Image (cartoon, rainbow, N blue to C red):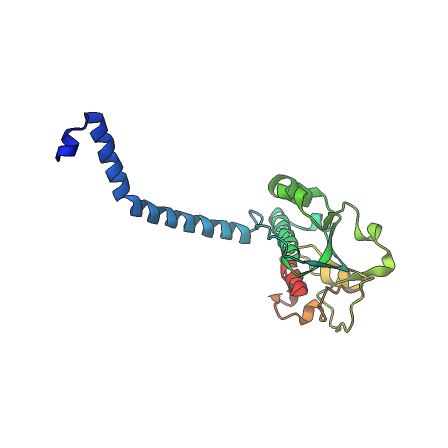
Length: 230
């Protein structure tokens, strides 16, 4: 014990030793916190990928330009999906919104036939959606909201190539995750028309990033929109 310590009271000395010990363990605590933060970040990333929590919303780009093109996510397939698939679709919708907010050329985004389990998922787990901008949540179907002659619907069975885009049209993609259970789903969609997105000249069959499930071709909603907004 040195002279300075001997002149201190017992309580003061106790505090001093505690402070010294705290300082000596600073690096250990810093490393432990860093490892804890890293683990938490990985857990959050995994939860987002599994659709358990919504991904963070990106801030809009400065000088963002909104085109006249209207893109609809058709959510009328609620009853065709399992609860797990509803969670996945909800997460993809969040990613679509985030991608549209962060691009330099945004589209007018609509979520039609919004209700049932998807709406409940947003109301209970993704409550931040009430502050979303430049997106319309509509309980009506796209047939009720838009002129039928303006509708253009995407199907995974399409093989044609689009040469021109028409901003007077409304382009639609089916908001469904079906895990290859509904064999006739794409055939049903074929009887509508096609959907084209902003800057997109090929149908989904020609898009490079594809997910092949047996003989069918499907792609998550957010990947489709990202191809549009590149």
